[in-house]
Length: 260
Image (tube, rainbow, N blue to C red; front, side, top):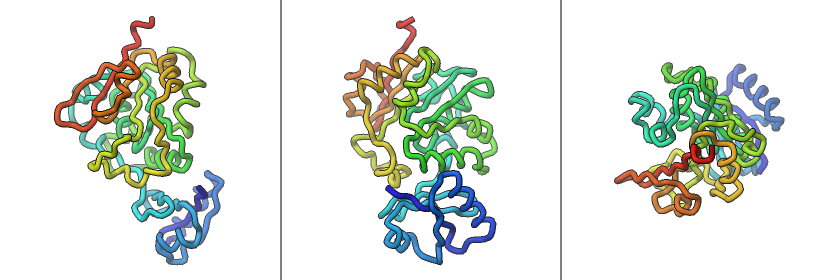
């Protein structure tokens, strides 16, 4: 799907300059807003929209009036609790100084928690196959200023504009401590409204044998899957399921120590 760059409804000179930089970064056409609504722009351009505002970028897939934009989401409250008690940290065994690959970056909330855990000596990578979404998330992680206690953690995350399998294929064997997968739920969770604008442009691919084979080759400590409690992927791919009572998703883990 074609994407075009535009500005806020009443843009300032600063916003015009920002839109020009974004257009150059992504090699996408910049169009004048001319005080048109999002609906009107969609009708006129027949394209997805990336809108440059004063403080953030907003992505509007064609036909949707609800934007996708970066914000820390659940990481905001998860990082105010003891990190060793966070379900992802607990099940993965992630430690300070470790490396972490988020195969399904989304809003990067899991990667932010992981980055807070691994600290300055650790590394966090996140894959997003849609190049515009990857750009929005990457810019947001570098520029978001609403949560000072997370700024260092957010800036440490390296956003990879690639699907997970392609990126894994480029990595050396046993090169990442923890590999994490949170594919788009095959059964939509209504509470997960933050992902509504992403259904369509985001990669909704489910786990495959190739994906798992590459993850098992690259992971040094563990592979973690987060999926709907009805998902058959836990059993199909050999994850040890960690049941979470009264929740609609569970975690599963494969320990990689046994392959050493």
